[in-house]
Amino acid sequence: MPSERSIVSTALSAALGQVWECIEFWTPLTSVIIILWLLYRPDHFYPTVDSAVLATLNLTTDEPPNLQYDLAVNVSFRNSHSRLSIRYLDISATAFCGSGTKLGPADDALPTPFRQGPMNTTVLHPAFRGMVAVDSMVTAWLKKELEAGMVHVNLRLSLTIKYRVMWPFIEIFFYKYDCWLWFPPPGLAAPAIFDAGTRCWVVN
Image 1 (cartoon, rainbow, N blue to C red):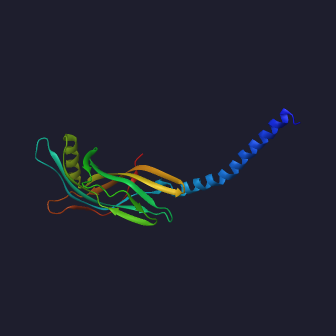
Image 2 (cartoon, rainbow, N blue to C red):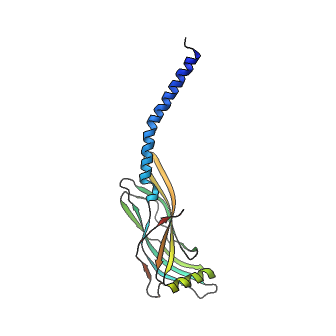
Image 3 (spheres, one colour):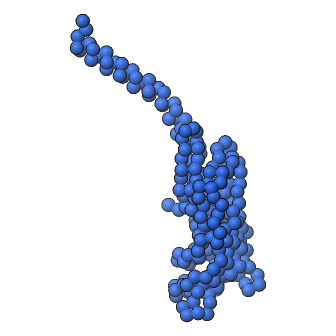
């Protein structure tokens, strides 16, 4: 009849064997997932502003003044993966000027959700039109920019995207990007054109 020590030793050996089998099974799979993650992680994804038109950016004669704006932007979203698709769950665009004066969200909701196949580019067209009350700091900023001959606007993109690296692993990411644009002062009859193209950068 086996002793108690022998029974414990046998049970321990069996348990260690099962643990080792689990390690042998999961280690290659985990390595594959890590490699895929390093190859396809979303910080390799950057929207691009291809062009923009600033038709209006001026102060009214009211006291306190209001800032009138009319901005249209063409933004490219490029999926450079050769195999993976990206599903856009939500996209929003907001424009800012000065020390953070909000020009408002895009006039129309951007189309979501949608799926973007591998090696594909989607171009969206957020537009901003309206009027916002501003203080003396923004008034001084705009006058300084106009006198210098260059007006700077920041386009903030907020994205919720979903990757399926491999079944059944699905990852959802939320990112914000800043896209800095610069324009000559828009005229009454001639809108200011931005056609240099600029890459948007992740906001930490």
